[in-house]
Amino acid sequence: MELQNSKQLFRNALDRHYAIGAFNFVNMEVLKAILQAAEENKSPVIVQCSTGAIKYAGIKTLVAIVKSIVSDMTVPVCLNLDHGKTFEDCKNAVDAGFSNVMIDASSLNFEDNIALTKQVVEYAHSHNVTVEAELGVLAGIEEDVSANKSIYTDPIQAKEFVARTGVDSLAVAIGTSHGTHKFKGKAELAFDVLAEIEKQLPDLPLVLHGASSIPQEEVKLAEKYGAKLTGANGIPEDMLAKACKHNVCKINVDSDLKISYTAGLRKYLTENPDNVDIRKYSTAGMEEITKVVSHKISNVFCSKNMAN
Ligand code: G3H
Ligand code: 13P
Ligand code: ZN
Image (cartoon, rainbow, N blue to C red; front, side, top):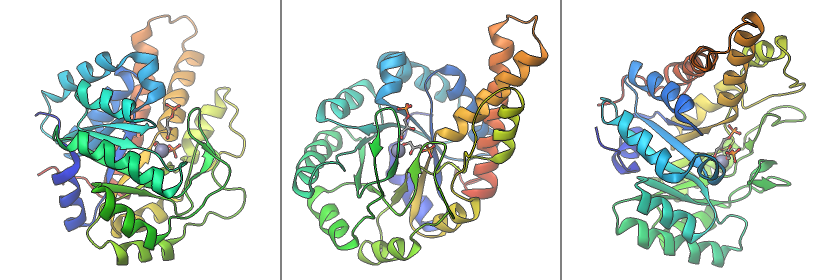
């Protein structure tokens, strides 16, 4: 198959009330592990690279390995730029062959966010590439993505934003956050805000960032073999499943893959101290990722068997 933009993928997800997992990757190993789970479960999938991943691996290399693997697959795959910050980030991704780009101008004021998003939409659409934007602020800290507190998306502003930018999907802030430590107290998402956004924008695909559930069995496995992840926690799976029944069509997951790969790798290296074969310990990490992604597709996002 060829790479797909998000249009038809999200149309199907909206109509059939499931969400598509959008999984971050930084190298061939993580990518293959994600795609294996999607193919085995006959699920559409989004794979995405941050600007940090692009800096690490090179944009041409990343696109080439995605296209090469996807050409032998039967399920729809979309390649997304995650958190593009500038017009150039997005243009470079479009020119390199990405099929969806996110322009994250959520740290700018409303008018500047609209102006930059509109510029990206015009360029991307003229190349048959769809665009995700963000309104509101997520809590949490990532290498290149940071915010001190969560400011929920304003539903009325969201309606105006979409009308003025022509964006294809919108990342909303309802209490999720990036990283491995999401809640100090009780986990809570603002489903009332989500419902209000849907009332204003009944047909718009919504996106949840910072949606790792931080599976405790993976945390425990990583910790058993030496990782230090005290207090790591994520979005409870029942909340994610509930979001999928709303208009949330794309759920971003990165931290869960980082933890599960690390867990598999640490276990293998500890149990096989004489091994120096890169393929063997990498495979152990990849198997752990495939397991986690399969579980999400089948039991949380409900995109299993939705490839057609
Ligand atoms: O949302 C951000 C992603 O988790 C990116 O992480 O910058 O470490 O690649 P990264
Ligand atoms: P997590 O840190 O919860 O995995 O979020 C990833 C993300 O939103 C990527 O854009
Ligand atoms: Zn994100």
